[in-house]
Length: 224
Image 1 (cartoon, one colour):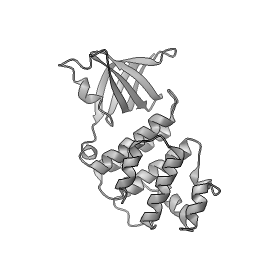
Image 2: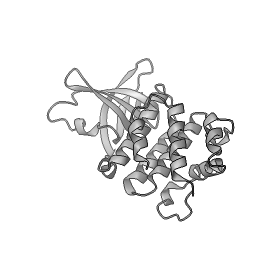
Image 3: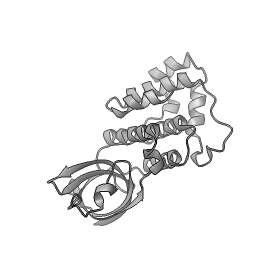
Image 4: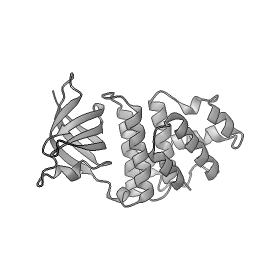
């Protein structure tokens, strides 16, 4: 079956010198693995297209009984030039991709998470303020899409501990969850929380739910 889908590049590995094994987060099929033959040949444009973070449109043949699917054409949709030129944006986006890569099994579609991730990356690519809120927005939505609604988890150990420091924590989290990213750069009604407390809360929340995400160890140092 031939499928066309937008996708974000999670990881790329050279295979047999001239080909690539590419793990993508696709809108249609979730996380899946593909082979791109002859991608590493000198005249092939695919070496640049399959860089981590890039958003692409792929056409491929889906084999239900195979773990790796052949790609027969690809088009670059977005190389996120402004994200890649900024260390904080790059690290935060890499953390989001790593969370997806390490949290999902193969071929479990999740269009809500794809659309959320894409909207956050678009925000990062066009804005330089409120980056923490956009990242927190992703974390809260990803947890809910994965079946864990942190906004309703009043007995969560991290929630209980940080509510002692900020009694309005759940209200602040709901405000972040409900942010309109498309208009956030113009909004004057941003969540008003103690930044250091929220930074520590989110750092512990990510470590609690995603302990294997190595890139977040760098990202947490950039929140201040």
